[in-house]
Length: 187
Ligand SMILES: [Mg+2]
Ligand SMILES: [Zn+2]
Image (tube, rainbow, N blue to C red; front, side):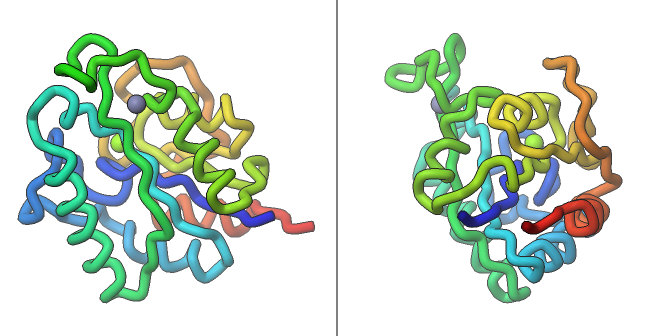
């Protein structure tokens, strides 16, 4: 069974400009690239799980999302970081337009994206970590029996959506990576 880091995207890896989708808006958070490198070097698969209700709300399209991700992936690849897969939820139960207006099972903190990744990659969720900047990320991790780290970048947990206690609160993704590596026990 493999282990992975489930990474939130906006506010965790890249600076959250608010419904980010333009490639010129890609700016990595401080420590993000270094953190990803450390985690990858410790044998974790890097998997992005991201809520993209901006698609459902009609602010940008799935194509825009994929274009941004392709750009992010290639920027990371140039720095030696490989993102294994990205999973996204384009829905919103009230604000979604047309087919996107659905009370889906993938919207955080629901855990369908993690379940899909677990089955796609043969992951042991109890050895996986969720790293994110919102309480939705931490609550999702808790529900999936993953370990959790909140980062102070982005929203820094101030969204107040869920009452949660992460295992650790990190200054940024680099700090998170150091904590994860020194607190992961492999049997
Ligand atoms: Mg975020
Ligand atoms: Zn969804």
